[in-house]
Amino acid sequence: MIVRICILFLLAAIMSSCSVNDDDGQRTTSEQGYFERKNVAPDPAENSQAPRKPEHAYARIALDCVNKQYPNKISHVMSSASDVQEPVRLTPVFYGCFDWHSAVHGHWLLTRLWGNGSVPEMEEEIAAALANNFTAEKIAGEVAYFNGDGRASFERPYGFAWFLQLTAELTEIAAGEGAKAQQAQIWLDRLKPLESVIKDRINIWVPKLAYPIRLGTHNQSAFAFGLFLDWAKISGDSEMTKLITDKSLAFHQGDRNCPIAYEPSGEDFLSPCLMEADLMQRILPAPEFAEWLTAFLPDIPTDGSAEWLAVGIVNDPTDGKLVHLDGVNLSRAWALEGIATALPEGDNRKAALLASAKLHGDAGEQSVRTPHYSGSHWLASFATYWRTERGLNRAPAPADPQDGIDPSTSEAVAE
Image (cartoon, helix red, strand yellow):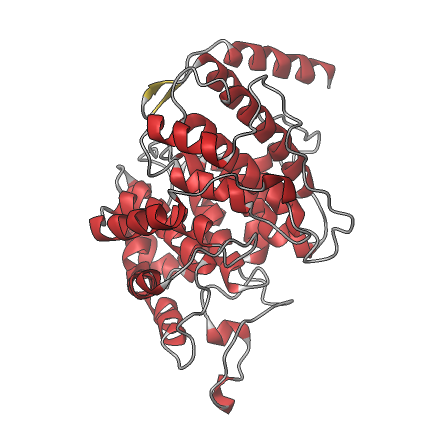
């Protein structure tokens, strides 16, 4: 054990001195050190059956819940007695993990880790689980459910956002080479009919939305707009990019003095202020974003401190609403990182933003270990989004052509 700890410290020291590139070139020194420290995952396992790093635990949580039907919370409009069905018959792909959107981002979590090679020992199991659910017949069942009477707003906008994050992930993997890319394209093609339904509903809804939805929970528009925009850019959908960009600017370009001191509310899992800033960093050029942020959040410190934004506190992790505050810590972490990395080189707010991100992310990751299903069924996805830097739009590492399922046998696995 002592030897292992020493090796880990040595590896961390070596990594902290290495140069790391991102999509735009070299990171700044402060960013480089921050991201490398975050991603040095310790190996806590003396027992070979235990997770060796957080990604293993997160993948296991998702694998255990994507087909776990009960307990289940359905937001379900019934038009007749025929609508009284068990969840798997209503939505035959995304029925697990307690509710529809959590099932969606549980599948996203597995796709993300499979695609970027984070858990090679689990890839066969992950691919089998995804292939079992991503079938043409099951997706047709999802489309039929969405098209039922009274369901025009079903899972809008939060579930929409996570579904598009799932297909965006597959799109990026499919753009690579090898077996994983081919398999991702097969799954993506099968998901396209539901993607088309969701895209059409966004195109109908957003122009009619008169005001932003400034909540800290599922209906928040800023979080959803951010993921819509990421999907549109990855998918090359210029019309969606323009729609979301124009509406975001109309809603938020003139916003000033966001009352972040009033956050979080008692059941928040998204920060209204930080998610709005994370959305705007996707849209505004760095100099304009820096100026906008000064007016929007004028009290971000310049001394590199972390405690300027207190972490959320959960007094009862068995309470499905109160446990939302564990999620707000993780979503704050990725939003703070997004804001920091979008600021121009030399902006003296970066250090404090990254320090607070680390504080919140670490607190949030501790919460994923809860044995209580009320939190564990969804918090692993939030932790994965933060840990894998998904909000920073860094594409997964190229897949090894020898990894994953052999596409020639995928039909047998999937069907």
